[in-house]
Image 1: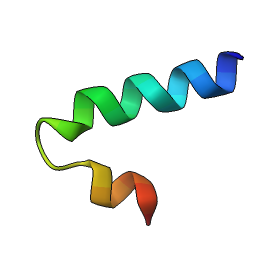
Image 2: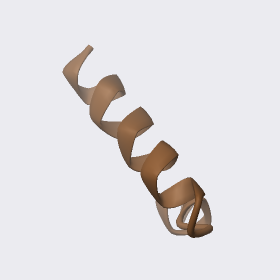
Image 3: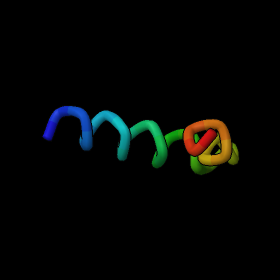
Length: 25
């Protein structure tokens, strides 16, 4: 759960800046 939470938070925060691409890669 912690991992999923951390990943989801990172995607949500970076998503606004287009950081999703960085997370996927």
